[in-house]
Image (cartoon, rainbow, N blue to C red; front, side, top):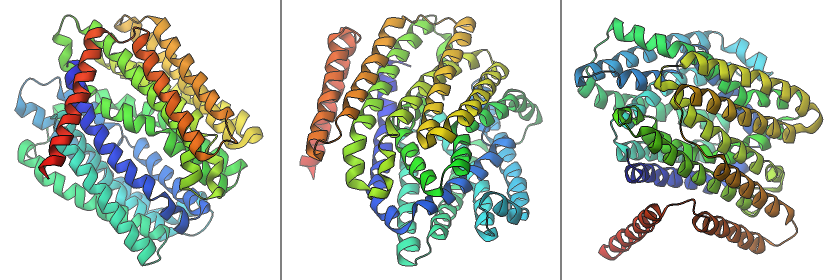
Length: 491
């Protein structure tokens, strides 16, 4: 994969994600009007319960296993068998687990929601089976490098959710029931349509040797998925215990914004890179290519971390009610956390080259244990701010560990100074933006734009970007502008 192919492929996902997230952001006033912070907190706990279930039974670990085994095959027929075999595994296991969850819905509701919301929990578990299949079939489109197809499907799901949420929540006054009904309808329809499209290419074959290979590689990833989930969301349970549901709702909002680093950078990049980089190992110069890719990925991640952090205050003060303004101080910490996590995930892929899924699981388990200790120490005394800082420290350790072990397995030439400079400048600019609190919104927006401009100028002036890459970026941006202008004139 060349830098050009990565940028072009990632750009498709970025544009799609920007459209989807813009729609979601514009609907924040709608959701915060019809759903209280307590409603947000309840939905957060319910989502966590479903995610834990999917992780425990290995449903969420299926993607990495399918990609790795898929690229080991030498024929299209065998590759299709990998996909169809994994479809059978995910759907069969998802159906069994969903049925068990629906059967135990009352007990789950009393334990987690502290009230009898049995029907609500049953609906959530029913949706889970179709959600797992939809995610796997969407991943198949990424592996086939059908970036535009993936984005169109994702946008269709988002627009369907928005339309149904407006109908059920505002039109029918169904509150959180409307939110879950919308999600269920969209996942069922998406799974059905994608399944019909996929089996035309892969058929329905189920092969036991491939299933065994998938289990050998993917089995240890159940532990890593659980550990990663724990790092992501265990703080919610501590916040739920030591704080209020309103605090949990505020923290959930800040987390969703901070995690846009993953959505806008790590997600689009991973959709192109993680699904296909194994094919690049045949190239003798792959280490140098990986090193160059890592630097640009880190630079873009730092830029997005900075953008989310400096624009959080002015935009949230406009978009949400004062009850949610506590999220403003949390966003920069969460964004920086997931910038570090995204870089750590790059080295996770290096470990998977030699199928070191067990080692990766051990790293994740250790980090999860460290995170639980930090949560127990920081959240009771510092509330949601302590939760955010526990997340930051944990993902920093994760990055160091993944780099250390990946470098021992497959050394990648990495010079530390440019990366330390990126981190230092990003953190410094975030601190500057946080000090300016009494300035009007227009002044805060101007400051945010200025800091971003200085970051970009510094990146190019410092020599971090080579001349050939600068020319490529300028040409790519200019060409994109010309195409947009031509499209507008064509209308």
